[in-house]
Length: 274
Image (cartoon, helix red, strand yellow):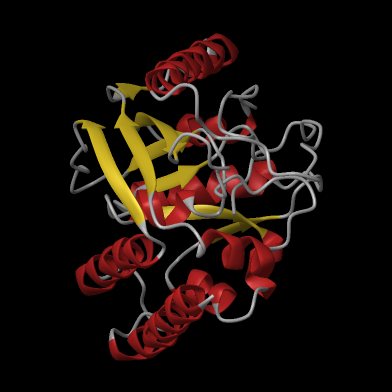
């Protein structure tokens, strides 16, 4: 309990520092500057450390073109995916609209250039155009094409709608495979699924002393917009294979579904993130 309280206090102070940095870096007025990008990456990396997560990086972290950003896609396990990936590369996120209303976190997300999507509202066309605009400005973007989270042991179907951002601009795509591991015999607190609520999920997470995350950067490739559905299916299979390899590597303990949580059915044609 003492450890949890101390960890929670440090994390709260870090979040408050992030609010201050929004002002000091001028992010509230212009979140495109190098200073804002570097500060955000540092802040997200530090968040991962404060959550007690050891990060292993596999593959090569790509360097964004000065003129165009990179489109990142990843399997989706938890809101923790955001600081995990954002601490490794300078990019912007696509988030579900509800996050904008989260206390403090919503303000940080909005102030640092996060894009928001209203899930199930036919918002994908507008958002794909916004993603394309960011990429044209040289700003990399990450979204989670499963449209929901999983327990981490599998990768759900990728929805192709947001990949249409590549039809607006010729860009490169980098797929990621994420896997979380805790010691054998312990329940993995990372998956955020079903009706899980943020505060109790975070409180439970802070109880664990050691969580290991593997982030694998798969090869960068151009998006094939002529056969987009086939391209997306093959991409999903590649990410699923990488996640499966990490799952086998750490058997018998891997991402385990939390008790009482249910995995929602696939969203109809939308993709989003936390």
